[in-house]
Length: 387
Image (cartoon, rainbow, N blue to C red):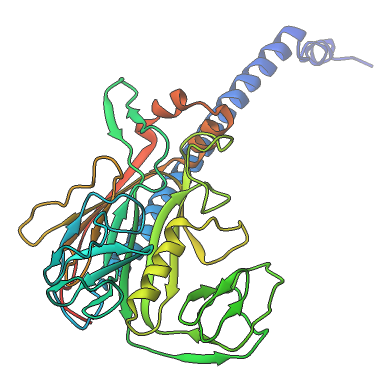
């Protein structure tokens, strides 16, 4: 019997050496590493694209809500339609700077403060103190202020170090008319959180409310004591406001101690005022501008997150912008005066950068992230005329 030794020797020499195995494993490792880096890069780009899409959607949706509200702005109907224009030198949040004097003569449309309330004259008057005729309550049509801008502005820089934006944090308040007037008398104890009411008697609900006072149902409030019925307002004049505040509480200004860098949430405020009672409208305005709300209150609705800039500029029919007062940073329109155009700017920061800036907690880091801020601009034409 013969044996083919050549075939057996060939079989014994067909194995893989250790060196060959190490080379193969190394090549596979490099391939896997390259594929992982490609996958990680793709995932990073996809997450960045999602954040960019969210940022654009966030800003555009907010601007659309602002445009829809502001386009309905109108002046509050008064017995005497003579306006006082823009008041730019307020001494406070809610009152004109001129105090009533019995010795002065006031022409129609003059605005004064008396007893903590704003009034304007319907006719020429001397020696007649508000609220006696011809004085009436002055209703705020449109107001821009810096009530929440208590911290120093931030100059946002690009990656190359050039200045891109100096941020502004305005708050804006205005009136518009809802033609669908619906009111319902609400018995004692039946208060819906977040709904607007007008007191029809002296009421006690999270504070004392006198007849005619506007108020709202607070979420989480357990005091439902009413001394009499209230009127649920589902139409009529609407008081609307926008402000940028901390992400947890609409009443806490950005830059307040313990709140971190100037990154906040844009909030929308709305309160029904019923008919055209200027006193109720002033109370609604003061309600927006001065009251500290609990975090559970839903009279403020969240509109946009990671906001670092909100600027509102009123433009007259001649194209000239109204300037804010240099000290109080406030502008107000009363009577028949409303802007012809409102110029809006909204700056939204990338969500990842916002989280990093909040974690670091320093303004210096935030100021270097100008390339991550998307600015949305829009001009809203106002339909002039009495509603």
